[in-house]
Length: 444
Image 1 (spheres, rainbow, N blue to C red):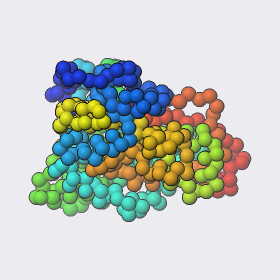
Image 2 (cartoon, helix red, strand yellow; image 1 turned 135 degrees about the horizontal axis):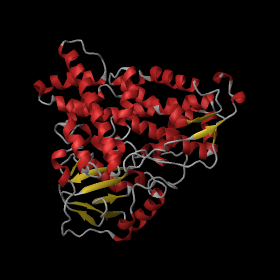
Image 3 (cartoon, rainbow, N blue to C red; image 1 turned 45 degrees about the vertical axis):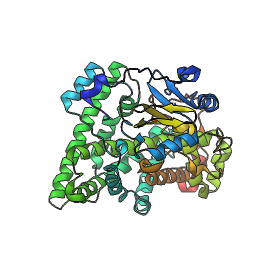
């Protein structure tokens, strides 16, 4: 369970007598510090590629090949996806009271389910998120991107996250899920604390505030799904992803997998994942490319390089740096055996910088031949469902920005602030300036 009030007070396991290779690496591990993360992982891969962190109670796996092994085992009886969304910090009593009294009850679904239930649900969603279908969304995405750029091109300064990209992934996934445009700002506001609540270590005060937002988020998800259920029941449902999922689950094996709480959970998860990760990816790409001016200039001069640049930015500045799995059986990684029933944190960001796979992995290179092998979307049966949609959004976002504002410059000395959680890493602001009188003709 992502939020399990019944089990919240006993969420953290008691330490057993199992020997855990902590050492200096394990003691120093701090996934909430994004600024030293990559330097730390370079050292960990060399000195102790699998270690135990006593602060979080997790085993951490840092090498590409080992992460790939775990992902391909997930759902096969040795490693489970269950627990991927468990809270890093159990709710304090006041936050738990908010959750219980509001009736929030998020079930396992898609992200943290194993076979046999996982496959049919995933397939139903893929019918609306595979490559050919996703390509039909491009005109709508480009229209949204153009609208945002129209509002800033003559200003001469902007925050590329807040003023440009922040709303675009939200608009896209909300429209695809059938959320009315007039509700979008309200739902985004509800979701603000979701990442920190689930994947961070907030203070008790922050946790209560975030729990109140999640309670409203949950109520909205329920109302929206209930409305879709009614439309589908009367054969008047639309072609949005949520309506399609409801129809497919009702049809599959006489409705064996159909569950209203499952639909509530899915609505909540997709709304959050669909905009949070893509926004983070875009912000990270802006910073990376503008800090490497030669590579920014290259994609401005040759837009055909943009898809490769997107993959390289996802590798270089991974938007989901860590994810979690649970061992069902003892799992041997190198010379370390992780017992059954343990939480394993796969350090996707570390694997994406592994020099054994990506030579000079700490360097950004948009011409890197194997950048597409990155782990940003995961591996195996739990590979990100929204991969094709995210790639399309990022391509259009960069195409239009480089076409209309190729001369933007980073504001010198700005502070780089990141989301305070272990699983979603995105720079919160990218401040830029430019001379509006030098805008290309297409920007005016």
